[in-house]
Each structure stands twice: as C-alpha cells, then as structure tokens.
Length: 265
Image (cartoon, rainbow, N blue to C red; front, side):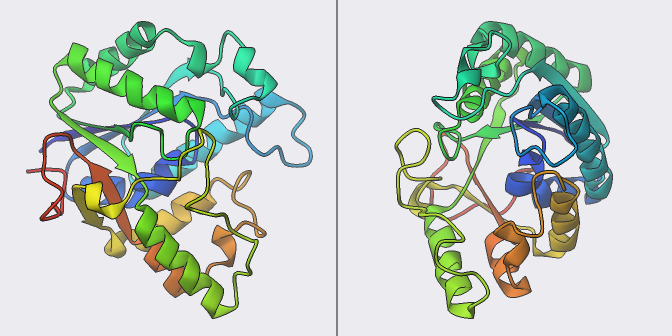
C-alpha cells in the first residue's frame, strides 16, 4: 500500500479539488496525509467570528471534521498565514505563505514527506488553478519538497476548464442556477489567466462518483465558507455529480492520451 500526501493551500481546498481521490485512496487501504499550508485566515468571515485568528480556529476545526468524513488518517499544518488574493493588503504580511522562501517551506514539507514515507504527492498546476498566490506557492513548494524527499510520483490537481464550462451550461439550463450566480471560466482569473487547464493537456481522469456523497459531506463541513447561498449549494444533484464526480490531475512526462484512471500503480 502507498502513502499519499495531499498538499493544499487552505482549509476546504482538499474537498473541492481532490476529496473523492482522497476518500478512494483510503478505501483502498492507502495511508492519506493532508498537509495544509495556511489557516485560511482571510476567507469569508461569518457573523460572530471576531477576526482572522478566530476564523483560522474555526477553519481548523472544520478541516478536522472534513478529514473524518473522508477517512484521512493524518492532518498536518505548515503554519503560514493566508496571503489573500492578489493585490490585497495581506500580501505584504511577512507571515503570508506567498512570502515564505520556497526552500524554507519545502524543507518543512519534505520533513513531513519523510516522516510518513510518502510515495505520492499531490500539488497544484503551474498557476494554482486560478492564480491565487498561495496556490502558486503550493505548486512551487510541492515540487521542491518532492526533490528534497525523493518523491518521484507528483500529481498536479487542477480543474478541467472544458468540463466545467459544460457543467455551467447544464446548470443554467436547469433553471436552478441563474446567470451571474457563477463565474466566467474562460475569463481572466486572479493572475490574468483562465481558470484551470484545457482537457487536452490533462493526463489523469479519476472517477470518484462512488465517493460523491463523502465528498459533498466533506465540502459542507466547511460551513464558514460554503453557505446555503453558495453556488455549489444551489446545484441540482445531477449538476453536482457532473462538476465533482471526476477529479483531474496532470503528471509531468505522461502523455495526455489515453487518460490514466488512477494515481496508484
């Protein structure tokens, strides 16, 4: 059996991009370790949550609950602060993950990889799916940590831009998700690039439909961020299945066709 270390930027990222993969890995007997770079201090702050530190405490608890749903055995925190979106004042915080020296953060992650004997590491694509500074740092730090720890199996979790566009069209057609309740997947994201990556560049298509309920429950454990008014909450079941029933990865050096169907040999 293998040891999968899933490296994510903020609480809830583990559910959105790879929750089904993590649940499937656990069900097959693999050890799964979730590593979260930041406390998510600058996410949505619900009424009654006084400040960024209080929000981080809420989100740590939510992440523990999410891990329990997915069956994740180990949870580690790198201890950096949420950088916020590009251009936010929080970008200048010296504690922000985007300001951490790559080598410093990579050494921390590499120590975790060695501690658990990681055989597989997941990180993000080159622009962190949508250009968030912390997601870009996850990509850079993840690859460097893998080099230090000698982990050769590295997969970039990403969003299939083409599939998401099809899902949006289906959601609008259902009448349950109105135009304007979502976003333009082809428009410029936080770094000026379209979100995710095109399907013809992706190497791994993971069917997680059997784990969809776990993934959904995990996602909604992050109640401070995923509310009843969220786009995801408004999705009819068939649209949710289309959006989240397949998870996509890219592995360097592997041809995009035919698509691989699992990250463990």
